[in-house]
Length: 360
Figure 1 (spheres, rainbow, N blue to C red):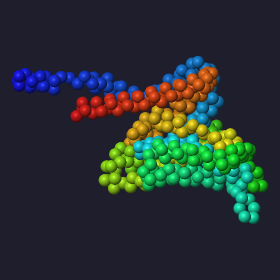
Figure 2: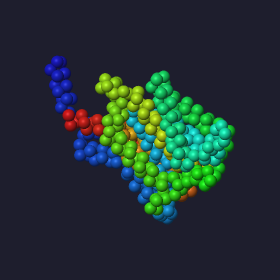
Figure 3: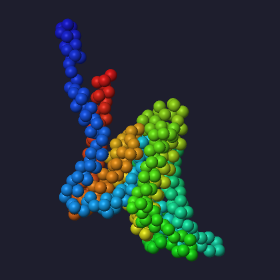
Figure 4: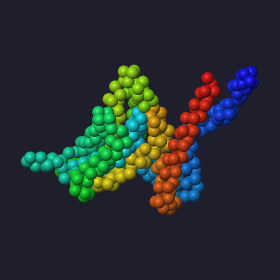
């Protein structure tokens, strides 16, 4: 009985691995496709909508779609920093709305001080709006790190707080006509959301700049390496001497600043500020990050992937609108795409693990 048992064990050990890595060449090809899935999906979307709509691939429509993508991409880049540390930020849409109302109020009615009203230039208003977003992000970070509140709960609460503050700012009203007055020196706000440079909207140039800076920060700086370390293994990061709480606060500040910038771009494009600006935009931002390969567990992801995910979300949404699909079905399709992205991300990780085990 003992000899039989030993022989059976030896046969089991010698049997080939039935897992996905049984054919290494095929597995490697599948892994390559999974890694580039966002680009593949984007190309397929362009081909599909281009085939069924003659307006989809026109120059004017491509520029318009890219402009729409820019706002979501900037939001998603900020969210990516948070997700890379293993956190989540559900408040970015509301932060965008709050920054919109602060900027709109400063441009429309100025800032009341003893002895009169002060009006700021459009550039200063933009900086103030971004600072407001960064401040709210810092509060998120402090709640998560100092009070040990789960990121989901902390930012969910801030979603309501920031949106409520945006509504209180104007008592639920709208700040119309933000073009400014020359005598007050507050004109030019339209530049970031309406104007173009070399035929490309300024908003797109801003997206490119933000993405370039984010890529450098995440890949070429010690801070970027700390972000991945915290998301990959927080306990190991602490033992390595990384100030984890500072890193977490910093990424929430970055997320808040990016959200505020996105809100200002949207407000500039509309020419008016209203409290419900960017409502539910946080879902598109998180979806873009996930589609781009950022793992919700933290430690894995790229800014370029997030931008590609934003293009998929934007080009899909605009394509569905262009071919006349109802808004209800648009939500269904977006949700299906997000679930598909998570499934493929998990499949990629399983395949990578299988190949790694086989090679070792």
